[in-house]
Picture 1: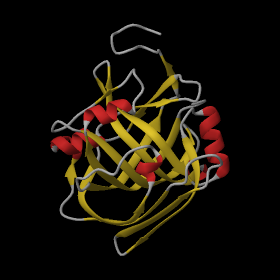
Picture 2: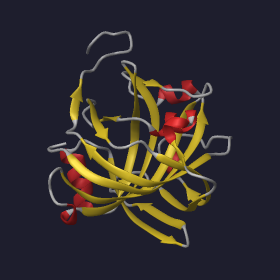
Picture 3: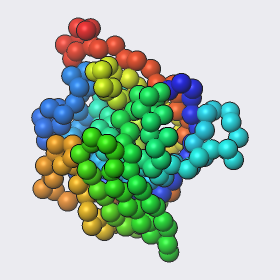
Picture 4: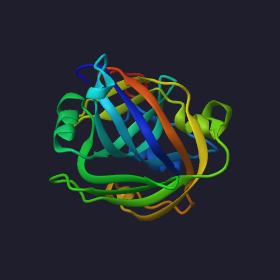
Length: 239
């Protein structure tokens, strides 16, 4: 990133499938290892909205709203639990172009709507990015049960308590960003997912297992500048 950013993440669904670690490994850059829970790697689709996105230090009232949908997995490098993004679909041409050019993130332009009614979130996304494989996601989701602190739940902690994310740029370089925020509050969740073609758009067969759902009302975030990461293979040799 050119400058650190402040923002809020709101109305998140974590939709999570177990995946064979060898399958996930084949989709990852060689510098990253799939992180596992209960012997599986995990593939997640996460719809939500950013609010008050702005350079750090700029008043919140001047920030922008940016609905978003990402496809991610969980990785380690040098022992640090991290997130790897396969894609981030977002509303707004200028925001997507800026994120790609200056923040080195694999954003795709999409037409997205997010509405909340009676405690339920309706999320619809259509990827319209030129040259990209089409992808569509339509879902309604809502919290169930009682809230819990992610660090107090082993699987919730695995999914949510990560403070670094990696991306691979078009020139093959690796970049990472560190984020700061409070610990997550999660709820068990239910979802009615009518359409999800995101997994096939990224070369994944739909997993046989049913997804595990969590909901979060969100939290506020500070994201560091994007930093270039050395091309270090898993055997420890730099490239």
